[in-house]
Image (cartoon, rainbow, N blue to C red):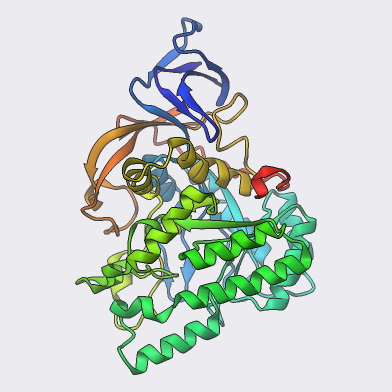
Length: 462
């Protein structure tokens, strides 16, 4: 038994001084500060710290293969970095390779969960509908895999056509699941890339011109129409502009269950990074947007129109990023970020711009758990929840340096950034895994967490 004592507990709906009683991997009780407990209870001192539910990262790619490139981290490496960054549950993607069944991809990825230092859940992925897909989706739903990733770009690799999207929405809706979708109009992207190749160039410094905002908003509008026709819930990953976010918000006003995810790098970095000496460090999809667009996107953290914040973690290294730096059509898209997601967002939006700690928890832990069928087991510190607990020093000032991070790469897009706020002690399932910034329990005990049928009734769907 443990008692986490002396801190300020932060939930999505309230915060205040409280102690937490923990036993057998669960929160037993939320106590008034200093309440008596069994003398044998181990005391975890949280004096002066915020006590947060462990972060839930809804968007991680572990060992992800795209084209000729595979991201470099294992489940152990990814989850170790996650825990150091205050995230105690990741949601990974089972994206099938050409010719592979979605079910086989999911089973292979799920089998790696036990290698992690923290728990994980899984998104399936459908690329092309056939007469076996509905049965595969049902089998995966029975195994607690209820969210299904789809792409409207990357033709010839992972792009799904509209018939596949509609059929998958029908099936997931009836199975208590949801389609989550990467929206960029492939036709607009390809045209922009071809134009760049024949004019200013298609190297990394021109990345933002090759995937314009219009490609995203056009695709969002089309997918929303399909979802409305089916009365199916839909979740949009890594929305990078106010225009895209507001399309989803307008659909919610019409009664559609629709959610927006933003990711840390679109909220913190802008496209001026492509003008530097190593623009390939920032090649991601969608690309970084202008400073004005970033500011507009960030405002929606305060309006409630953004539901979740993920990392879109893809652990490539500089050798991989530099191999095709002169042609972004062949570069691996994606940035390492599972460890830095919470600190960079907290520093800018809580520390600088006044986002409340409760809203921070809602965006980075509670809502990701809800949209993935993991709440209240995850994303909460209420009795019965898993004892995934982060002691957060809101005043700790530090500078991001790749040498101090734990991701399986040799760079971070936030190199040299000065931040305020950082996790210092992290409990996973009631076990202290990180104490005072040091790994004290390296034993993999990760579990695949099965998603419950998704229920978006009530205020959360708005």
